[in-house]
Length: 276
Image 1 (cartoon, one colour):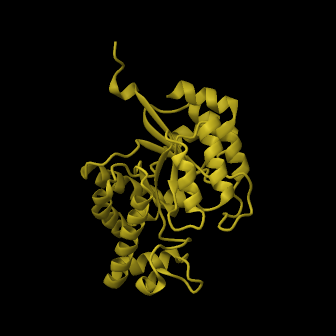
Image 2 (image 1 turned 60 degrees about the vertical axis):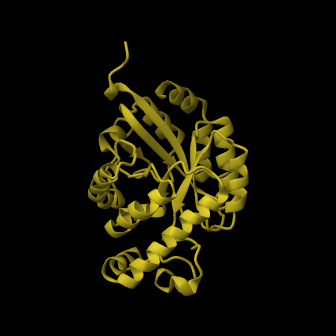
């Protein structure tokens, strides 16, 4: 007998920041070859993106998507094309509240954001890799204006699947006691709104996404616990593996090597096999 639709499971395990550093790229390749990693999200403007693409071409089973980067990273377009998107150091802005307000209220800033979004999609298309999915650095696509631009531009470049970080706290609490942090509390309402917009647009998105509450700290115990308690439906677990910390662009406090260890752990491999 075919199981009811609600009982079916689909699991995607993703690594973010592909292309940011050699340590990240090496971890992605190893975690896919030897562990449970099934997808990676490419930062097309970062200095090690070409190495990431070369590795991805050796890994035909790895789904590679666009990690749209509008904050805390490098832009594709030159500075004179997007002056309002950059800080004094020439990199994308980090003052998210003021930046978000400028995007909402200033048409000139919105035009620059649209141009950079399109440039990143073009850069991904130039790699020749199939576009498996799209997500955004720091989930900045939860901003309603950016979401609208992404939903307008993305499908022209083959976007069919978009990450929306709707993370069920009940499932987290089956693994360990947890109280949603400020980021999760702020993201929640916008995520639910975006999920409805994505599905109305005819795009695919996971039913639940894990990685927000334990961002940078998806340890073996947490990963194996989530995999054992996985809810029915379409699930994504996103991670930030690297072979070591301390690289340019590394987030303070992130347990990069421990996240790689979780993706390789035998306990997680067995649990993922049962969950799929």
